[in-house]
Amino acid sequence: MEPWAAAAPSDEERARHWRLDELPGVDLLHARYISKSFPRHTHESFVIAAITHGVEAFRHRDQLVRAGVGELALVNPDTAHTGFAGVPEGWIYRTLYPSAALIAEVAADLSTLRGPVGFTSPVVGDPQAAQLVVGVHRAAEQGNGLAAGSMLRLAVARLLRTHGGRLPERPARTAGAGNAARARAVLEERLARPPSLDRLAADLGTSPFALLRAFRAAYGMPPHTWLTDARVRRAMHLLEAGTTPAETAAAVGFTDQPHLNRHFTRIVGVPPGAYQRERAKTYKTGRGRTS
Image (cartoon, rainbow, N blue to C red):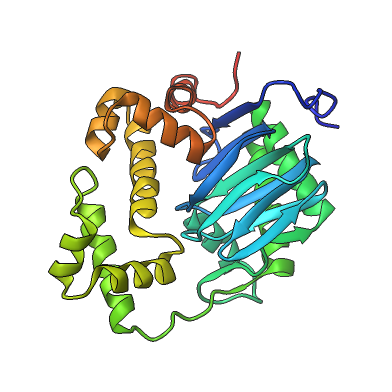
């Protein structure tokens, strides 16, 4: 049983978002959340979350789903989703964020899968795979990169065989989808000083409402929500590179460091300072284990 599982629901929430140097291409999150609510957001990586206590509920695209003990929450890259407690006592989970390159590497060794692959269901009941995910965490906490890497690939291979498949082909590009893609490119380029919706629509030769509708259809959220999500993802890279939180806030377009702190914590699950300290610790010691 998780050491946090016996704690009373009124206890504080806890979270550690970190990385093991010997496990490249993978972030880890071990957290207990009670009142925490993740806004709609996306990840550049895949998400493989093993629930070890309680229930996590989340909206995956437009579907409300729930994952309990022995189940896994699975999210493909760039897929809009939320996250919140499905029961009063909240939930505890151990999450892996493997890169798309790592998933593709494992998929290439499986003769049953070809081309771009991903998970076909947001919640699966697979206690064996969940135990492997927990095993990755425990091995990483001990600094055992060999065991962590082995169990990681076993878990990914099992999930791809039983709950994976080719990603659906992108639908034919419509004028609205094309405008949404161009709008996204503009926002990515101008994170710190984005244009207004009216200005963006005018530059693309469309109306604000049509652009808003097309953007939500393409990316699962309106442009302003996507912009906040993109700023946080860019902030993660800057913090990892050693940029201070204050400098990071200015670079990505947040008003100040508290503004960054608020949105970063809402989306990532830990404050930017804690996120950066874990990265610094990993690179300094050569391993992700705390002393």
